[in-house]
Length: 613
Image (cartoon, rainbow, N blue to C red; front, side):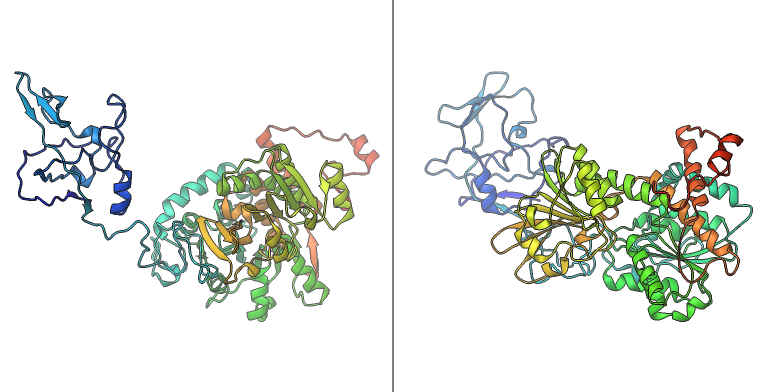
């Protein structure tokens, strides 16, 4: 950016002013400020302590010139940078500066000769690229990409097309790109296949924290228990999921995959999977239309029909029932891992519409007690910190739901010094909350005073528009459940409310009176949308899913009816035992006498199915 000082007396000649180039550490950052804004920041001449460090104005502002004066100085800083006032010195180190008696500056040479330094004139500063105003909007905004630096108006900011992809990414929709991996295959749709190398590194890191899945891969790779299996999956596409997919492939399965959440996909991991030959259709920041298109691309492919389903949330199962019901004639079973998806399966079973066996992984002990409890206990803080940078000590928080997820969230926030309230419909869970030291309330009783609202019920409309209207200014609202139905976000998409994008996954929703709430991930799953989850815990869940797929695929006909089943207890114990070596843990073994006394097999299972851990 060039700077020019303009004077009315442009014909007067002055000695040339030589400027030394600034080092990177001295260079001023360029700001697209208007001329008026720059002028307002220039300090008056002669003010302040002459020995104090000089500020960094755009140009030195000396005293006003006397009658008849008016020289012009052309400043051409190196590399287009505006030099600091303290850097505007003669190149000759032997020259010394003295203050002239009439207020100007004198130059004293080593032989004692005194000459008057050229005096800069106080004039208007013009920028060559002045038209590039700081608040000028980009001329092109991708249809599915939104720069975090732009605050959209209430007329278009609540469109579902707004996504959380980083503004530095290519704004072209992956659906409009023609991409091929190194093998020449184009049977995938990801953000950028060139990110595959970075995704591969993340997958390799995840493998180190997933000992059970790697052990299962090693033990069963020779047997290929999933040979002939054609698995269509719809889960979060993360590095941990990639380890699961590659394990399933090593065990003999063919896989096609889509994302179950429009914000949780790691683009580089999806690219790495596509590069490895997995048909993956997912990217971070999908629109609702993209979401269903990706699922359809996984299912509706010529010459390939799935015979197993791995689902997270039930959307994939729902889509096949709705669009391709005849596919269930060849499907051997469904494995579902979320509360929402399991609820849908039980509804289908109750209505007599479930036509294949289904395995409820969510309610297996290893999923409930480890993924839901321990994972959320750590990831809730991570998600909130990354998005809001807030301190938890002394904050008032209400957690809606005290199941395993709610228990984990409450424990973490209490340990950080937060004042935690709990809402619950189940008297047993409610009593547990009370015994754990939490105050049980109705949401209406505390909605005006709390700083954070967290939902984790698996229900719908837990936080309604009435609640949102009554919240205090800057209240943070987020969801730790699978679905985005718990917070009534749709009620906020109205013209009278302004949506302002603050940063990735963070929106300010502003009321006409100026009150605002901080909405995270548009009410979708906080931890996987805004942060990450502990890899080790996901190893437990992924191993459980793999064993459930192996069990349903290899089960003899008639073992499982058209109903929903829990994972056999023996498998739960096996998953847990695979993770114990990580802790150098040593199990005690029953003696024959002890096993006989308890009526157990020495090798398990050690608890009856009705036992509650």
